[in-house]
Length: 214
Image 1 (tube, helix red, strand yellow):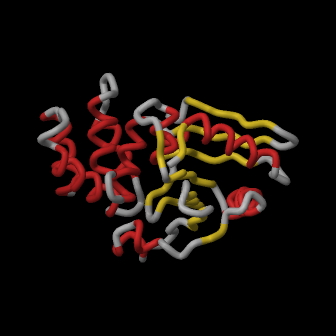
Image 2: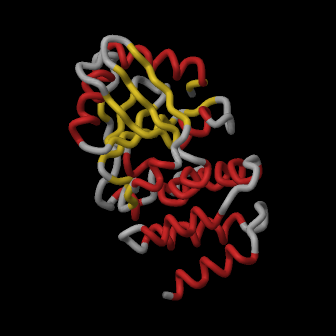
């Protein structure tokens, strides 16, 4: 596990080893720490717009002793692990793990709308800059639905129950806008599983039903 202070120090070390500026989007446990939903995480989840940006980041973490691990199917459900654009995964011992996505998160696109909702930005500056944009609570829930890892449902409950005016409408609308229908089905499955522990408006259920039936 890694806490917020240690993660900040780690990102600063990574920035010190970069050969070019890098920008990425934080989601998963990393975003939950930035948004103060949790105090520690084992999974450092980052999305890069293309492989070149991800490779620059990978070169930097390899200098810190991280190595690629073929543990995808032990972390993600089989149906996810076999999808296009699964993450590359790097670890250093049994401490934190990097899940590094590029271009999309499995079949889910990080649209301009999602990026526009990432209001919190963290910059780690040495010779080159590591810029990390923090995904919004709604998009964080969207991607928790997509990744479907152990404890993701628990995290969804924490996010929704601790966010003022959380909007399932944003989650559903973004899922519908995706090119692949799987994202909307993932969101529907999540909502069904958490419906007894989080508040979901009738209008939001109706919107979901309308979209799923189309």
